[in-house]
Image (spheres, rainbow, N blue to C red):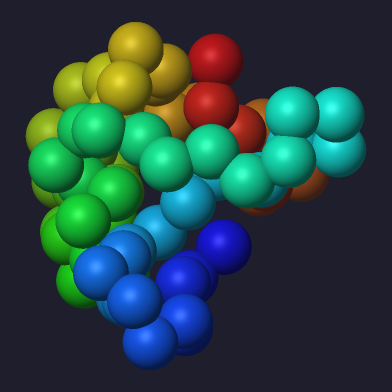
Amino acid sequence: MLDHRPEIDRGRVHEAEAVEGVMRLSHEMWASLPALMEAIATSLETCRPLNGNMPVVDEEQRLNWD
C-alpha cells in the first residue's frame, strides 16, 4: 500500500494484511515506491534474494518469490 496521507509517512510503502492491518516496515526498501522498485529490479537482475525471498519464474512465466 502506498501511503497518500498528508502525514510523515506520505510516499512510504506499507504492507497490508487482512488480520494485522497496515504495518509500517523499517527496511529501507519500503521508504518509497522508487526505492521498492529499485530493490525488486536489483533482485531480478542479480538473482539474489529480496528480503529473504528468491525470485522464481514458473512454467507459466509467472514471477513468484520463494
